Structures are given as C-alpha cells and as structure tokens.
Amino acid sequence: MSVFVQSSDMIGVDLPLCRECTRQVESQLIRDVSETQRELERYQSFVQQLEEQGLHTDSALVAEKQMQLEIASVRPGVGAHDRVCAH
Image 1 (cartoon, rainbow, N blue to C red):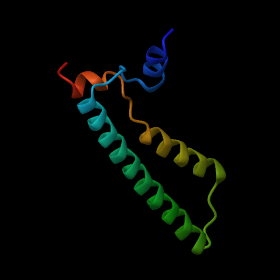
Image 2: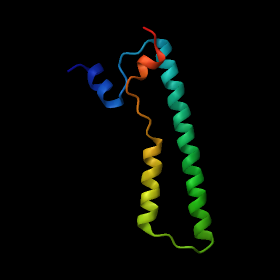
Image 3: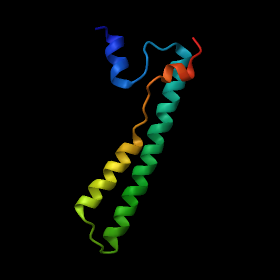
C-alpha cells in the first residue's frame, strides 16, 4: 500500500493534491482550527463562570459537552479534493 493511499485513508482526502488544491485545503484547515479554538475558548469561559459562581457541574455532563465539542470540531474530508479541484 503506497504512502499516498495510506495518507488518503487516514485524512479522508485523495492525495496527492495539486498546488492550488493544497492551498485551498490548507486555508480550510486553518479556518476550521480557528473556529475550534474559538469554540474551546467560549467553553472554557463558560466553565470558568460556573466555577466562579460556585456552581458545581456533574463530571458526566462536562464530559458529554466536551465530546459534543470534539465531534463538532471534526470536519470530514472525504472527497475534499474533488470539491476543490477540477482536475
């Protein structure tokens, strides 16, 4: 199995990408990471506010919210090359 096939399977993007597609995918990944970081900052701020107010949260509820944020941050890339590249 080639490195490209293994990498494509792992990230869900057909490799190798042309230069233009690589730039577009990179830009999208940067936007996704920035959005995820903002979501994390909002969540951390919310948890800090709860702690400052003396409200205790159920650890299972916190774990569930964290899982939801992690799931929301995952952006499937299957076929991303086809969406951004006309080659």
